[in-house]
Amino acid sequence: MSDIEKGRRYPPEKKLDEIAEKLKLTGDEKAYMLDIAAMTKTKIISSDLPKYIMEKDLARVALRRAKAGNLSDEGWQEVIDLIDKKVTN
Image 1 (cartoon, helix red, strand yellow):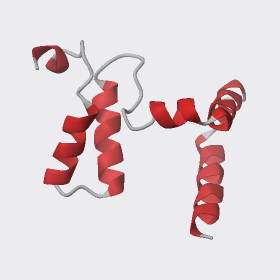
Image 2 (cartoon, one colour):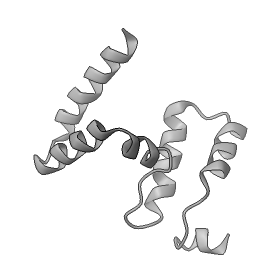
Image 3 (cartoon, helix red, strand yellow):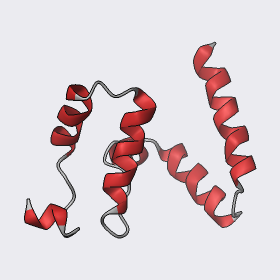
């Protein structure tokens, strides 16, 4: 627990899931909590993302292209809007 508090160790995803469930967090609130937990440790992303990113080749391609092109927040919003449109159809 001390290592987690000092940012030397990432909190276990299972525990974060339990906290989110107990607090009855919405999906957005849980994502925010995971992002905050990731920010406590340098060069770590939210615990709900690595497995998905590593399983999806095109997700990695898209992220690398966005990084190389320095995609703006507006550009990312367009990507999110496109995803939302695809998911709801």
